[in-house]
Image 1 (cartoon, one colour):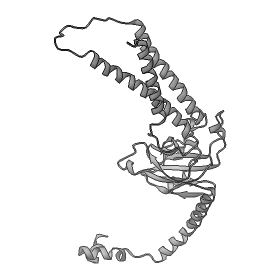
Image 2 (cartoon, helix red, strand yellow):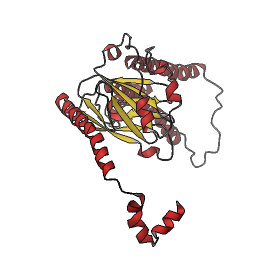
Image 3 (cartoon, one colour):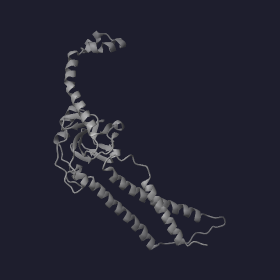
Image 4 (cartoon, helix red, strand yellow):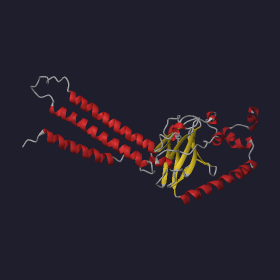
Length: 319
């Protein structure tokens, strides 16, 4: 029994649809979702993957079918019939991509809005900072002094944005490191520690060139720009150690600009905070102690000059 071409088309369409839907949800290309914002981005990515898989299978399937079905056969030296156009087909292959692009655009705008992208007080309308424009690229003291200023409370209709921040962290990016300042305690650290389930507001600025704050598991990324404060808000949901990566080419050592992000319970976070505060209080005392036992230049260089056969008299002549 010969099956009508319409039935074949329907069966192939069903198979392609089911395959696309399955792969779009089971591609395994994303890292674990560790924040409240991650499912929003994952949903958009899965939708795009589903549509892309379907289009890929259709296009490649038609190409393979055409290569096999219309291949050149022995003794057949004639050209195929001339076809000069098909208006309905042209309308169809123009309308379908247009509908897909518009649909994905609306979906992506909705995700962007839910994450605070259209908020007038968010990163895209952040205030210029005059002091930040004059920051030296490697001066840590200037970095700490010019920490991001406070901005007004976010105000949009999105639940992800209207939820008040429970922790604020001022972040400074410099070649090639990140510094994190907790304004509530005035603690500065080279690691970002966050409590589980607390909405975090990141206020960042760059000290020299443009950097990008990116934590893949949180699905958040935001540029840190010299002279302009940018903001980011998210809520971590899974305990663990993650990497903060600079995602903007910022110099020859851009690839090593990474910092540790530790998501832990509130009790562990409070304990870490107290330990860091106690340690920071001991730094001045240690500095005074080291200064009282400071070596002279000759004493410091003595082991090295002896190995190189340099006499101390030569060093005095150089001075």
